[in-house]
Image 1 (cartoon, rainbow, N blue to C red):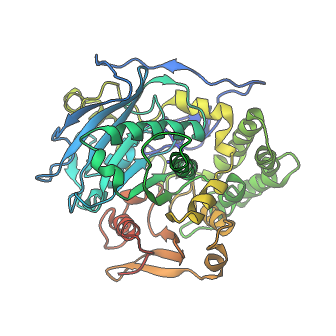
Image 2 (image 1 turned 45 degrees about the horizontal axis):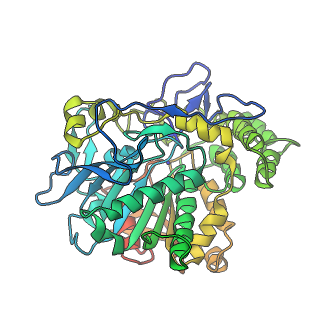
Image 3 (image 1 turned 90 degrees about the vertical axis):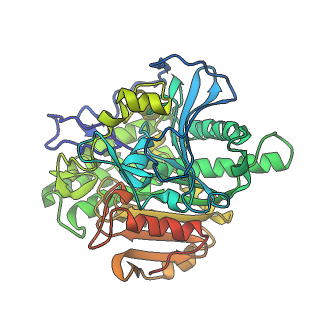
Length: 491
């Protein structure tokens, strides 16, 4: 997902970012750019591990069955590091499926930022346990996605969450290469090699609108190179891609801030004059639309970074009003989902799981690296189209109470997709989606592509509930249906 560390109250904004955020706030701007220079350079910050451990490049360091988080009897778990190099260690946490683990698929989960830890997804959304409101403990999650899939949560790029080492990654493409290398190490380990032949899924959110399409397309390219003999390696059996509340095609999505702020399912976020000012920024010569277009048309890092700075300063941030950008039914700062920091910095927990780095929700260094390259404003839609047309079952989903990557923008992106299913998709009307007869959202299916807008959900879709449904129940039904290689359907 894009997004903030535990959000600080910033005087420059009339509101503070939510506690449960993935978009960093820079100089009072949500998704802002710290500095612009003629030649932005990435920061190479070496993050020192908090405890001694010796990486072995190409190998895993693993703690098995720590007893933390997943307490379902007989369900295996493992946590630790995959060492890409002697100074690049990727943190992972694996949970076996609660049901039929020997045949269940393998899913990796990636949060966004860029720079946010995937422990957000694990503990706040759909992992085997969920953080309690006091941020000190966890409870077993009956709606966990490891009900139906083996789950692998990964902190990436290097420097994010519990991962540590040389933090040089500054583009989605560079991040894809690192995760490919990590998975090669993971599948080469005797404890996990059996999963290499399983159906493989990539699910992600927020900045995952970049990560998901870019990584999936890269995996397919690598598989083809292995098949034709130009590289050696273990192919990844990619069958499913899920992208939630994602930033994929900024040119298609940024007008969504203007429409959603003025007219959504719940309430306007700002005055009509604020909306008018933002619209002027979008349409004026040299404004947000023109700058994103220039970025798309071969723009330099500086051009794309400048577009991020302008558009977020004058459109994304001001249109949030006094509401939580991740869940507009709450005013800022929304304490839900609860902060993970007390739990994930508890020395007893950290020791049990084998973590070697002091955890933070978001790495400012990684975020700044991406901001310097302008990766935010580059278009990932062509990669998404490639993945869909390759036969990978793909779902895009969005919570209807999320502003930061709202459904107006995401649905505009899906409407502009150019795939073999797009004509059919765009000819369809939304269908009501129910769970056990209860209204849960609106959806469309065309071929192996699906989209669903989920009622009552904020940015972290699986963290929420609607009506009489349980927390995360809608997200688990969606996940289960897609992972069984089915289009969405009502129950």
